[in-house]
Image (cartoon, rainbow over all chains, first blue to last red; front, side, top):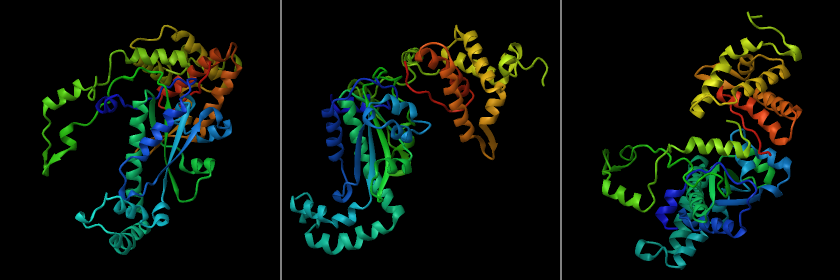
Length: 261
Length: 128
């Protein structure tokens, strides 16, 4: 699938084929894609635990259910729990930045050297940053978000459906016994969609010009309708919700999966 | 006891006539109508199942919703313990129904639908 089409087809899928297994290879593709996400100081805070729903003991599965996500946890055959490993920066102490210098990604042309990393970046920026939990969390979680978004797009590129949910962080840590400095983030539910790929249509979004600006905050970024048309042709901007057939689709899914309406 | 309401066999606190007039039942029916575009053809059956549930828990429809929510500054809140209580009662009610697992879940979903359309968030499991 072309990149623009993948972006256009991604939406939160909440109806999965509960009994259709997901190929292990596709899960690996999702994880490989997450690993290649952009990441500040090349730290890579994101950790993932892949769970086969049917291999999880029922008491643990029930523990992980939140009121809002109980049904989707039942429906999705694969759950990927994402965590933020806050301990990584102090463990690697700038070594991955040094690696970037070694491989020429950070070059002297831009002021980078091992000495700069060892004597300035780690001791004066990174290490102190980890002591300001609020700021550190924001930075680390933002990078995790980027990696999780990569993972989501990969799932759709593989013909799967997926959505991110927020699990109960305390229970998630208990169930998986992760280290204390891992912060529970999201669970990505993965499976083959039981709903059509459009899933009711592309979700409503705020007006473009209310989100993006040009030069200053008073000048909305001008949206060119020609570009919009090109994106429609490329499959990135698709039919907007609500689609006329959605109500019927939900009724049929409710009937087939025996869900309340 | 309000006019037109009386204790039925099995402990139900509402007569059939009074039952449909309950504000929460009207909210439910209106919600279904809005969701489906018209009143579901099997609405009478649904009402009957729900009335059996009311008898099962010995509560009137409005009382169930009232128990599950409370007014606080800034809006309505769901009472978690009561929500869990009714969620378990629905599971029990479902298990007590005749028929296969799918038919039983269908009955439970009727009650869940009543709760959902009255703003009490609830989900059933996958069955059948």
